[in-house]
Image 1 (tube, rainbow, N blue to C red):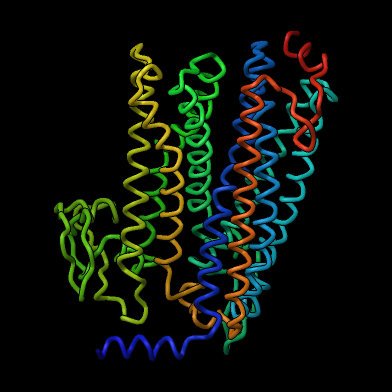
Image 2: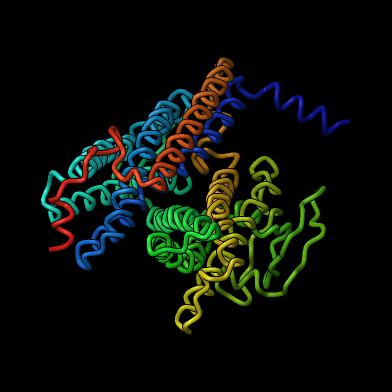
Length: 467
């Protein structure tokens, strides 16, 4: 009864806008981040396919590049809407953050906006350059698309990394002074966090594309179109999936010094100890860990790169500074578990291929790849939950609590409802449009009408491939 009264008392002291702001940010960011993955990875995947078409006079590759460019246009258009919503949310949902630290974060947001507009320009040039530009010039429109997508993502990750590793300013009597936006943008954790997300983008886009063609092969469509449509994105996803655990390890090894509370939640460490065990499973209840499988020493090795180093526990963290332990823990374990499975799936395929075994003839493998598409999204979302929830109760770690960043606007619940309606409508529209495009492509309608691209395939592009 006492604990229930404590919860009620805390909820009464929280700003009216805190809970809707959290729900709004979680919903909109979780939805948009999937589209952002395609914005980062898709141009590079299309470039490789288009380059193959030109170098090998491969009309199957050309057809795939052309189709994928139209898919990317649909995803970019929807992502532009959700990204615009996010740009307003920072100031609307978190006035305490932007009013205090806006000068510190402004440079990264400015560069992100510029990168977005440049990406939009070049995606337009590439889409409407089909049959209008010389083929060997047309393909290079993809390069600035890919670069601007990466730059925009880096800028967003720089802001998030800064929230976890605040630098580039001094706080004097509650006022931010000596602002160095470049130091804030290139904070100590930005490169590993960006690389982690960059690889995740290729995993999501690559496995999602491969899953589409694996599903087609399960339905008996085992032609060159489906095999090539599978192999190129799966290759990108495989490299990313196999590299990701190493990057994640480097990123996580900094937590003992920068965010010990988050590391304690990740490791489910109630007490500081060394050597520390690796805990598989488990749940944190009433200050105790229950139902876990403990493997001695491995916790220190994975978290601290040492067989004897201490792993900080929750006993070193004041109760009011601890994150929601179970949510942080299980999100982290979900990300690691799914990521490990995807890396094993990738390794199995390429080892088998090197040994002359074609797993694309195996239905169990194709079914697994179909599952890998949504599982990559699960790993992505779980990773972001672990990162953001694990930073709580801070929005700027060590400087600004989330409760102090929120406002008193209880009307944000209406904004959340409107956003959910809008995003549901966009999701439905995207599914309907993409399914319609796929259906017409299967029926032989290769050249779909605007706004997805030119209506007629001219002779120039085909001749360029055959040249």
